Amino acid sequence: MHEFPEVQAMIRQACAQAPAAARITRLKIVVGEASGHDPRHIEAHFAEASRGTRAEGAALEFIREKLAARCAACGTEFKADAVAFACAGCGGTELVITAGKNVRLAGIEAE
Ligand SMILES: [Zn+2]
Image (cartoon, rainbow, N blue to C red; front, top):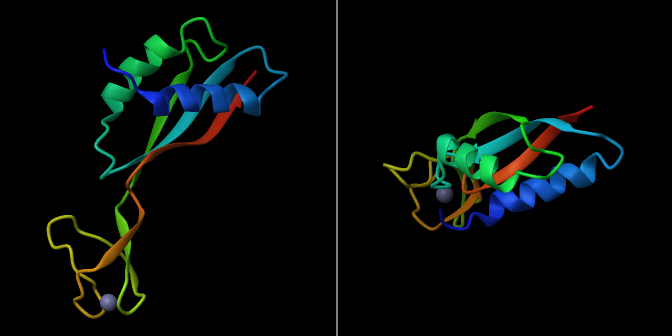
């Protein structure tokens, strides 16, 4: 199984957010649709990486995030369709991705 630093970082972050909790029971994870990561893959890595930490056995809740972009030419922000990747305002193709490209921790529940 290859390295998955994002998962390790999220486990560290979850534990840091609940320093007094005995156990992390749930992690809410935003998965960008263009992140290249699939929730089942993240789950498998999580099971491995959380072993021996307070997050071991926690439930994972995945929140899909749509790809969003901002046009470099006119500044229009819009939800991007990966198939037709052009500005919804002016048709420009020089876009800055603003969401949907990564995986991040959105929240936790602990006890
Ligand atoms: Zn534009």
